[in-house]
Image (cartoon, rainbow, N blue to C red; front, side, top):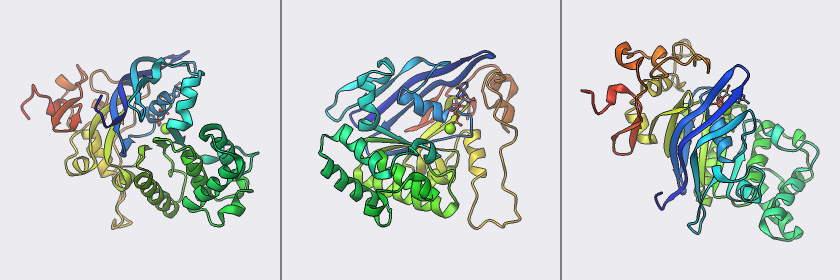
Length: 336
Ligand SMILES: Nc1ncnc2c1ncn2[C@@H]1O[C@H](COP(=O)(O)OP(=O)(O)O)[C@@H](O)[C@H]1O
Ligand SMILES: [Mg+2]
């Protein structure tokens, strides 16, 4: 593992054993997150983004299971731990959750406790993880609410989450995630439920906090437009697999995988004529039990070469420095 890597996911497989069959939600995923970097995981709904995130926090419950692979977390002092090997309810993973890695979700209502005041949730989390006294925790909580842009932070400490707007709730959720100075923040579609203006404000805030706190962020979204706003590196997922990986600049200058190309065409543009129709990707993500043989994207791909694409799933290959793609168009054995 490289010395600036904070999290390294290798050949991760997280499957669900349902009555109807096995859902390979995450099916051999590889990527890593460097220090002080925002890595965006992008793909349509059902591609395995959330299950990847939940695997990282060892939150998968039956009928789901991490079947194989490793998730190596590197502490500040250089020690490394494989999260997959930890007991899901043991003390090691509980210290990692919150103190090392924190998470925010699409709908903060479900993760902010409805019966507790905002201030109490912040203070309790700090008391649990930071070893400070209550007065100090209150002081730091108010400062943090102020930092994430909550007006009149001190008086908001007594509010309940249902008293706030969606945008304000998401700010509180971010404050809660930051309250233990964790080194990696996983944000799972944190702006999807918000209106466009609030979404832009929250993205700005996350970008600013990432830089100020020199945090790593794993940002999950279905929207490449958001990736352009906030990402440093991009991991494109399709049907439980990584199909392309590169820096944001490289992905936007030179998208290689036909799926990435199709996602690119579906980004709304501000200067778009409102009558012009956005192109959407042909077809649908296949049902988990109806994977096409060979390349999982083959049935929606404009470049599909049946004799090659329907027979084998190509490996993820580095075709330019730091730019990885899983497609026969770029396979080393092919004439490109
Ligand atoms: N508890 C579960 N039981 C069975 N299948 C599941 C379960 N949770 C998720 N899945 C399946 O795993 C796949 C990936 O889901 P998810 O990671 O939530 O997708 P994304 O976050 O990219 O929209 C989907 O096919 C989904 O139906
Ligand atoms: Mg999801």
